[in-house]
Image (cartoon, rainbow, N blue to C red; front, side):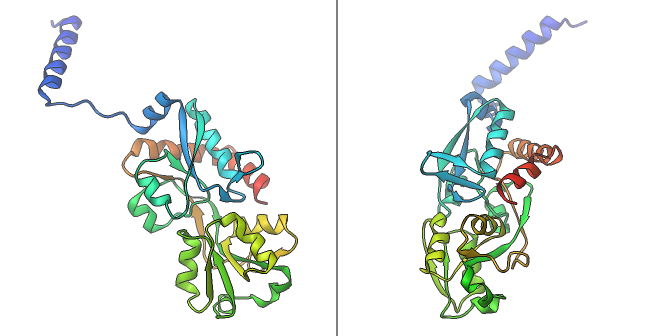
Length: 263
C-alpha cells in the first residue's frame, strides 16, 4: 500500500522537475484572483451618461445606476472600486488592452463589441430615441422628420448614438460634440435641434430640465440592452459577473435601482 506521504513527496518532486524543465508552466492567475489580490476593482467609465454613470464635478464622485452596480460587485469580492476614466471613442481600445477589469456606463450590447470583447448578459431594456426642446416636440413624430438637412442632430463621438445617426439620418446636419453630458443643455439653448440618445437618458433629462422633451420616448427606434464590457478571454470572470447580475436581478436590486435613478 502506497503511503500518503510518498504520494505527496512524489507529486512535489514531479512538479518541481516539470517546472524546471519548462514542460508544465504554472497557469497565470485569472481576473478574479488578480482583483482580490489587488484589493480593488478597476471600473472603466466615461462619466458622462446620466442616469447610468456620471462624474459629479462638484463632488468628484461617480454617481448613477451603474456606479451602484459596480460598488455592489466590488463588495461581493471583498474589494473597493477604483474608477478609470475612458471615452466612447477609446472605450474599445481601453477594454481590449486591459486598462480596467470592467467597463460599465450605459454600454449597449452590440455584435461588433461582442466580436472583440466579452459582454455580460443584458440588463435594462431600452431603445434609441431623441431629446429636443419642448417647443419643438410636435415637429418630430418619426425618423423621417429628423432626416432633413435643416435638422441639426448632435451626438457624442465613437458610440452607438453617432453610429445610429450616420446610418439612419444621412440627410440631417450632424454635429459631433465630445462631452455627452453637455449636449442636453445645448439642445435646450437652441445650439442644436435634436440629440440622439437612449430612453434611459432622455427620461432623466426631461425630468431634470423642463425646457426639454422626448416625444418618441414610448416608441423608440430600436430595442437594446446594456451590458458590462470586459477584455475577452477570461471565462471564469465573465461567469462570475453574469452570476452576480442574475442574483441582483432576482433579489430585486436592479428594480430598486431602476426606480431610484430612471423612473
